[in-house]
Length: 104
Image (tube, rainbow, N blue to C red; front, side):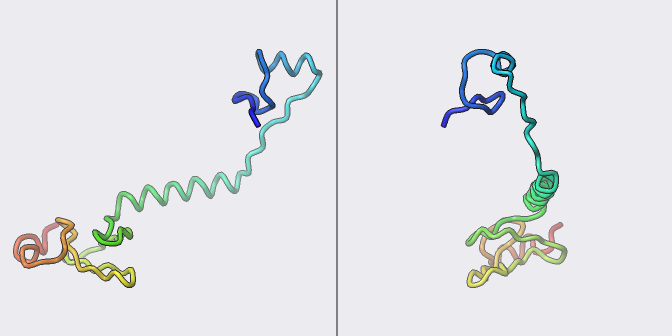
């Protein structure tokens, strides 16, 4: 089904208002579910916060948030459990322990 991108009615030639005036039709306003729109705004805001405050696990890519402590992370997603470094994103190793374990 092809429709007009402006008025969302079936495709037509010419201006949208001219079509309605010629047919005597009254334009119906597009209804927006305000509750659904509000939920969508909150969901989008949550996704943005997750992007800004988390890093993906290097193995399974689940978002992980660091809330203090050292750079040694353990993925909480079963069965992954990868131990990795928040600072460099590598699997946890001796270089991480010696070089940037407690960097801020």
